[in-house]
Image 1 (cartoon, rainbow, N blue to C red):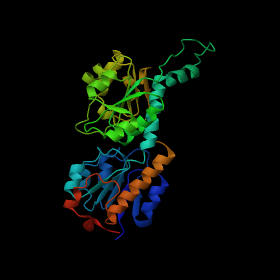
Image 2: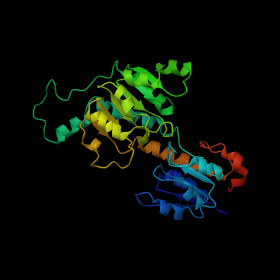
Image 3: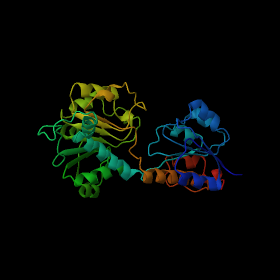
Image 4: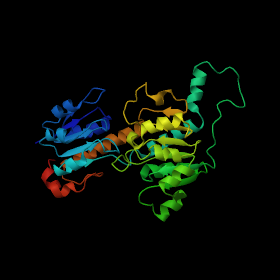
Length: 336
């Protein structure tokens, strides 16, 4: 039997071609993601789903797919999937870490530097016809990076890549994570382990690189924002729910912090009427940290390889729920 696969949005052709060689593939071709009701209809009769982080794959969706064996997410985050429910049902869940690390770290620095040097304000200044004097000593003054303190919350793949880039700016690096990194990693990155409160109090730039979970939801709330320097910047390329967005708006209005640079939000897309959209000390991006041709092509290939591995009865390269093997061994889901 040829496996039937649902791909919830058109992805890079490299990934699709891998699937199409061995499977019958249905691709949701619209720009907007399918609604929950549409997903329920689409997954019926499918053996695998390749989804995006905009697709909520919960028990209702899984319940409509009686043949479902694997959910392959085209993302490094997987909080949009009910992993516990998938495991109970013997469904393998995979994701795409690693391949987007460098692109995301680069973009973190793009946001950080845009905030520090007021690049977005400068662009508007020029385009708006406000620039009247060729050069002024005090025009759009920003801050130096050299010698400043960079606080990294989460020193995983992306956080470590961000730290490596900070070395070139001669910054002091602080980091926090629940489990301390090895001394070898700390020496290589010249990173100093501190608790979260100390990191927030001492950092000039705080950048977030943690997954969204019960433990990290609203990790940065009003209490934590009040600890930051009034000149400090918050950068978020992780997930919007890690930050209490209402508290952040309040912090920016009341000048508890100097500014923010955000690629992710609690509700996406961000409404143009959101208070953040009208703040000059905030840099906004539409969730594009991994948006390079190279990274998205690699994500598509890895998502396809993960899915096909499960259907071949092979442990996939990036498995979220290894405990599922005790519920349904790979030999029982093998189709290829």
